[in-house]
Length: 303
Length: 303
Image (cartoon, rainbow over the protein chains, first blue to last red):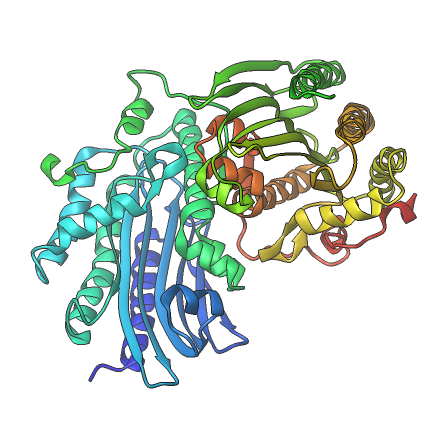
């Protein structure tokens, strides 16, 4: 039987592996670690990288927290008098060069047990890519990596989780997607498979992160860019801020339940700009990207 | 009997007066106007100023919208099958010089009438000041202006609305106030006075805005500042973003009810920076400001 300790241990190792791969690919930036304790139980290891050659600011966070289920969540989940255990790894990276995409990944495991002997568990996770400049071939490459992982576990996963990501990483008030999406899944429990098979899927998702993102680091970090590109990057970052602070459930959950603020908001970019009613000029690369910030694009078609 | 048309007309004139006073004090920036229509009824005049001598980016918006009360609001207000009319002026100004404070003001009127003949109306509003560097004497001056306005109408208003502002303009996840507060009031209706007397109070609040803020423009816009001050300004602006996107009810209401996005988000600063776990060094002006971001400070005491 797969225990929460095994899952936790693996997530911790995943954090190590990813940090090492990113430091190697960056060549200059290194992760600063903060260990923190949660008053009500558990804690985490936040790792933040700043001023790298390639990564301007980013975080790779591990946490494992437990205790009494907060009331509002207990109500939402219809679980009274329960204790919970939650562990996961969360990543957001903001690159220096606007030609390198922003990336986000999260993998998580959650379980509860209540006084009357009921217990429940599930996995969740997701990866999505936010290129400042969308290149369809790159989006296709990214989605192909995710599809390969998904297909090894269930032929239905990729389509289902790709659509879920389109719906989740959506800036409703702008009616645009955050980027080119990826995959998103939540509450994958007994109905979807054994704990072992689902963990194996989540492990493969987690393990795909480093090779996928370092591909973009290696290929794009030294492409030319100018002031126009930087300005556009700052605008795209402000949309990232809007998504995370207004719509992202994980961020809202953290802010409303008194989580460790600096770990939750490690997803914020080093700098973001807002320009009133900015519309990219027709025919520009910026307008081209704007036009691709839509749900339901079959990116793999562009391979 | 005071009509909604009279209130609306006065708010429109207030927008004109304030824009003129700000342009005069700025000496370079001017307001660009966008008129917009709301599909479901009404519209507005958004006015945005950018790249002024003193104001880097800001908005002074007027709107008057009406129609069927959106279902979630009808439920929250326990008013079914109602129509509503809402009009107001909203202002946020982000200055160039970190020695000039950010300011916000909103004055609004709201009424509903339902099919069964029930109707209700109220006024709301608020002004709050967010100095990048808090000077207690300046905070005292600001609060004294507001107290003078309040005292002319009701000796209890200032204390009550000052406390309401402390509670409202509070960045809960940071456990700090947005700035030095000001006054905030909402749902001032029949229980608090006649429509005429309450409108008169709201008019005096609105009219106090221009002289109060231009005082800071004139006195502080040409004070010296350096890179350290600018960096701190960018951090304080990121807290402003966090408050508006995570906690501000007006912003959330607008984003969730399909308001005009560019008008709602005119409150966003031109640039904001996030630094992981930034702590100002002891003994610095930044640490001094940080220590003053607290509720329940009796600013007037510092006059």
